[in-house]
Length: 603
Image (cartoon, rainbow, N blue to C red; front, side, top):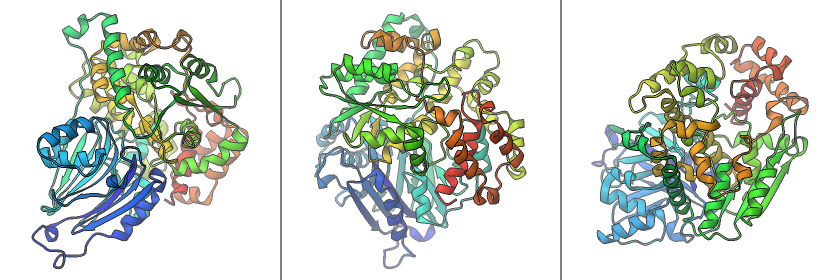
């Protein structure tokens, strides 16, 4: 896990026929250096820069695989004429290496970065289809001066870019691009509509800023030296079961899922450092702990975080994480957070760590948890993705027999309808109901026939990458901690997509996964009420938190920005606990968080 950055020059004047001494102005290495330095927390173990012809690459390293200097980046292979910057981990790199050695390739390092380089030389951009893992990378071809950008199937690793005149810059985070300078920081009206309506999920290529875009998951983009581009999506997952799938008994599905999850957990043990677990006390992370013990992981380090209770809402799930820790004899760490002493002081750092504004309350939970975890381990496995992949959320069961897929999904998931959105934002941002139109377009696409399968596909391929997965990446990497997500192993995701929907969403959600988990983890953890990562102080806004929010929204910057209608903001401030989204999030926090993010990044 690392941070990558770069600048690519392209256009008619940058072709390979021009030598460096004859060509036009080269890439801005100083800007790339600033972008790279802005990501120092993602890679505290090393830094590197490479500039040649029409490219400059920068890299921050977190040493996880091959701790030697041989795997330092940017990595250049002069024999093959390739250079790479890479963020992530390829779990099957040793198998690929053996295959490539059989083809005659010689290796100078023991890590996964060089394996990608050799694989690209052997199989071209199609090599991404052979990679099992999480990744975002850029590869430069010396002889053609073309650059290939790629992102993993589920979008676990981020890749942002910004374009200028005959120039494209890219980075692992949006704030890193801002550090390079020259970014159009006007608010994107389409993205604002998504942010306020779609639980802050802004689908690619959009971001909240007009001048920054993001590469979609499962996508390869090739930029030729002359400026010609080719982009393709290399992975799709179809939701729904055929006759053979429907004929399988529930017990058979349970065994298939456990086998696939065992493989996913085992793959994510690939590291030259110890691997811990973020243990919430829910079935997903508890199952990961149990399977790791099956793999012989003794003295496993596990970590939980809890917040103080506000009103009647409890702020921790230690009762359940303690059961799991005791059952599997882990070295368990519990972090208790007091709102006044730790939460409020930590919020500025948490917001600054966000590549994009993310409204979920548990960002601060992951941020504070990652701070503590990073003192003990460099790598953790986490249960993110299970709810989307196996149907664990409350909006899935009503979709089983829906006769209005788009309408029911929007009613259950959307934060506000378009009429309320128009009343909330300044006139120049009202525009169209882009979020509603997007849901309709995605639901109409082939590959998912039933309403519930359309919802599961949308959440797995879009919402997941730009909410929970991004949240975990941003908050853990703020402290140089790598998070791995076995429930997003692409083989497991493909398998889950074929499970009959009734087996997934039945009995309150994740039925087939919970029944499979009974073979591994204590029943008290499985039969408990469904919980989330609770941060009551950011849901029930009152006291010191309300004072902070009021100050942010009354600031000169907020007033001059004029994004929101003051009457709407005052209505939220007058009675914050009367204004919740269907997902039980605070509408006031959503408005305040966006302003906090923009102030944190000087937008």
